[in-house]
Image (tube, rainbow, N blue to C red):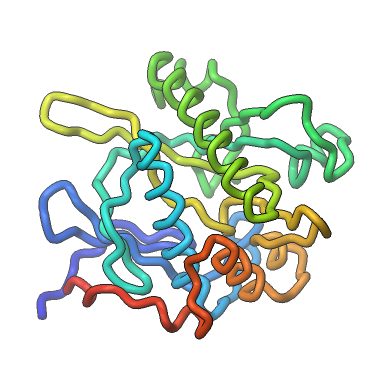
Length: 254
């Protein structure tokens, strides 16, 4: 077996060189981090669950014409993705006040926002991912005005679709983070959705009880992190009764 070349390693995922030009293998780790890596732990099975949840949501978004980097799941922890040039901006879509917006603006957690609010952060661990404006993004060349318009439009479409999907299974989509990249297909350049969509980067509350079903359980020492992620997968209809260990896929690429 040949050893794969590691392209990038983040806090929750590792990217390896893919089997074909223009592809990568995205590996989901069990590592859990919060507060820009200051708090760290391991949640057994988290990577398996996030791989499956992200596959499901990216596939559903692809079905409605939202282009993304997902190609196919390879096994329990890996998926084949399109290689993209990541735009160094995190897009946060907020439907309900939670997290940093509450402390920044003095809003009570759980307050419904008058409309979906989009915020941008510059991707930099060293700077703690600071909030930035559209002016910063275009002035520093992280994205063109046209690309930023496309990112905003896609983000709102994703929010509309996922909000409805989660409502249908009794979950409130409070807020979530997206990343986008430039996908080069010959002479054509497309802005497409990248990274992942999972309880790691979404706030998900049970609609009946407001129980948190996301990484806030780890951030706030609430316990039951794996159980919460499994509950999301179960409601999405993608977790067998036997648990995440039953999620099978083709052999790992080596």
